[in-house]
Length: 206
Image 1 (tube, helix red, strand yellow):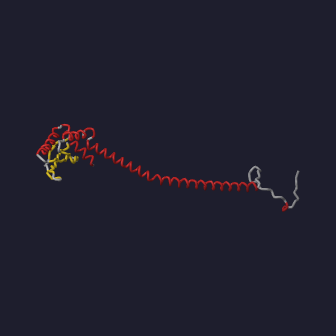
Image 2 (cartoon, one colour):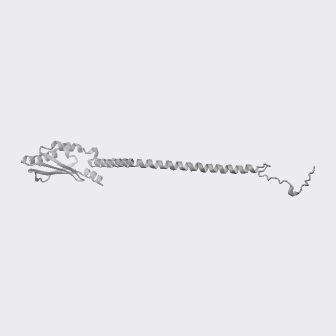
Image 3 (cartoon, helix red, strand yellow):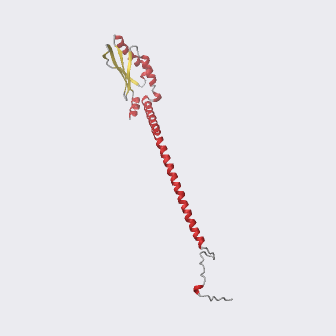
């Protein structure tokens, strides 16, 4: 059957354009509502990010304040760590100088103490890459104290445990002086380190 529309063209109802294929029509209010909902979601996302940013800034400020409070303690800890490292380095240096377990310097010091006669005392013991120095003094009211100094030197020289890794132990010249009306004689004993010990001490200094 053929239908003829006699209504004038300007009075005819305009057909709504189909926005989607398959004949599905979307009302304008749906489109407007969808756009409005999208803007609303964008606003919510922006507000959420703003709150998150503010929260992170507060957290950063709190951590910064906490760090400022911990900074003095950290400096103290760093100082202790540095002191420990220095002590460790000194300990390693001492081990190198003393030759570790190969040279028993504790035994040598004990022998020096045991052989030290009455009226004689030591003021300094020094070690260099080539020499060992033993400085001391003795009260020189009589010749006995000076004899004791020579005896002390001779006894050390006869001690094989003391002379291990040492050689040419000698008593230098004795210098006399007066200390508060008392005559005092200062002496110096020197002994050389053998080659292996010299290498160890020199290596430590480098």
